[in-house]
Image 1 (cartoon, rainbow, N blue to C red):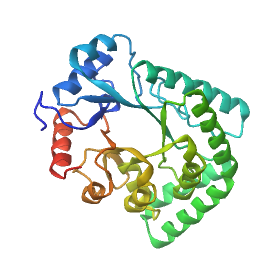
Image 2 (image 1 turned 120 degrees about the horizontal axis):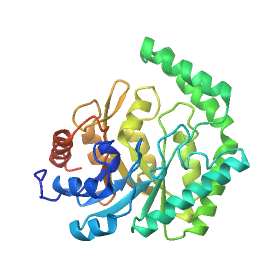
Image 3 (image 1 turned 90 degrees about the vertical axis):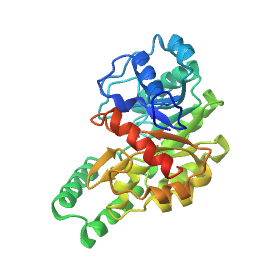
Length: 306
């Protein structure tokens, strides 16, 4: 399944390339050579221009299955889409303009799903406290006391971020009205001060059920949250599996995310048992890992029938 030229059933995120391949044509041909038939337009430090992709797509038959909002911009502290819940009206409007640009590009390339990632609560004090908790966890490990403090902090973030959650719902409702044929999916962030924590994700999905907004699972992000004493893979997939649109497949160990599946700590057998066969499955690993690691990761996933 992982030999060059033999198709597999996964998508490959363009974020896996980093700066190695500087054109979308090279990225597409490299993906096809590894057996992928679909791409995800993912986040990158240096996004590549998409001009010329039409000819490449006709030649290779590759398609674009999903887009992470922000992929058209250099990676920055506040990626496109992460401010849709801002309490600042001007910030929200700028975020909406940027998301609309991404959606328009997604439609141009026949991409059916646009993924919006979580955003931090807008509070300097809580941001500083999150940094302190991260430092404590790194120094002390996830002791019972640290895990308890993290859970308490996440609960306070949830209360403080209520207005942002409401603004996020309004923004997504407006985007659905503008683009009724586009599938939007929400992916939680890894930060302790992210407003899309376990409970808030449910609130947003319930509020936007009529608009069909879905859930996108990230195995690496949820693992890092789980090792901090927060709900883990099983809880998220059980709660939101019926609204699952896709999954980013990556491993994690310690504080290191975006590892090739099979090289970290994640129980991918649980993932295999918990995700439907028809959802989009995207291999998304750090660009420091090359072709050999990508092919080995795919073989690992195939062997588990994920």
